Length: 178
Image (tube, rainbow, N blue to C red; front, side):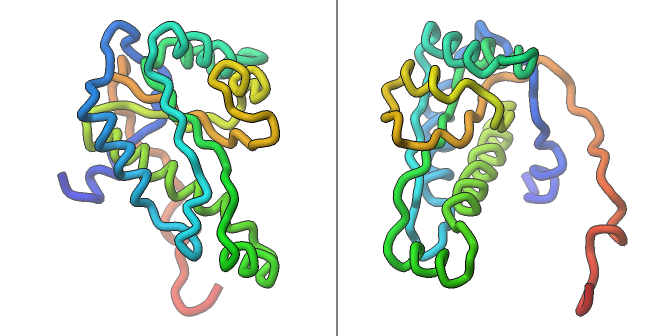
């Protein structure tokens, strides 16, 4: 598939076939894409916690469904939890000097790699930032001092693709000046 076609077809899927597990080989390719994502100073400030045990996946999904948000998450057969890990010295120095917290950028890039790789495998995905962090940490044994930043749901989508609605190019792109 052409890259632009891949980007065009990828969407945030919020309905999964809970009875259709994600094949191990597809999941491994998705995780390899995440592992290979670039990061500032090659710090790789992440750990990917994969939840694919059906019973645990439902529990993690329920912990992602708070205040009416993300109710669909309990039906996702896979959750890839992204935990922030320490950055290396050069990334830390760069973050301080430039007043930019590079791990958040890096984790965003890795999340994008996960979602695009899932799409390339014929799977749906959705990046969640709203969830009960404390409960999920307890469910999967993430130390309380660590930050769980994202839960990416993965599975076979039950809904058809929708056309993307985006701002016109002229509003978001300029050349050589703002």
